[in-house]
Length: 73
Image 1 (cartoon, one colour):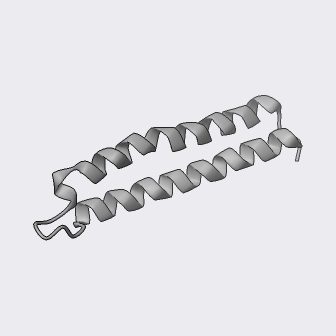
Image 2 (cartoon, one colour; image 1 turned 135 degrees about the vertical axis):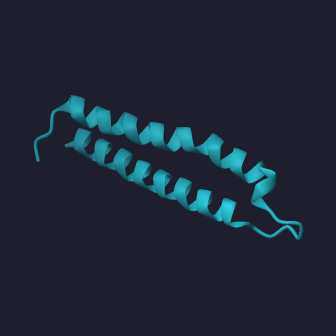
Image 3 (cartoon, helix red, strand yellow; image 1 turned 30 degrees about the vertical axis):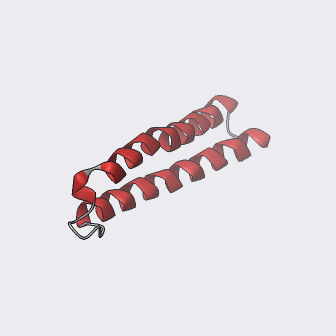
């Protein structure tokens, strides 16, 4: 497939942004008092946000890989 380099770079930057932007949010959610109950078990707050963040990061990594592979030809 012949894709212009500029579009490939857009995919690379979008992938990097997705991975970099979600890490601080994950750390913030992990430290949030709503993340654990009185016994120290994970709450639905943590589980829901963890799934959202990890899914977004996996899609970001996939986008990043696709962008690099298109640049490589």
